[in-house]
Image (cartoon, rainbow, N blue to C red):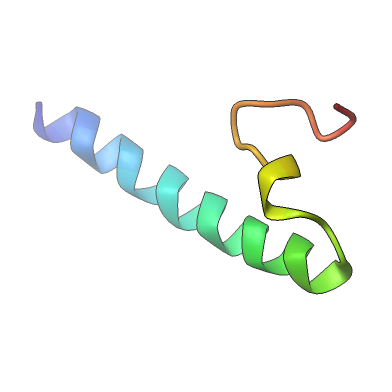
Length: 40
């Protein structure tokens, strides 16, 4: 269980950082989904 949590933490941080950077560049938050394709 501890391993699963450790694996999820970095993904969450990366996702939030990526969303912030994309939003700054003019991307819409709802279009920036970590589980979706950026082309979609």
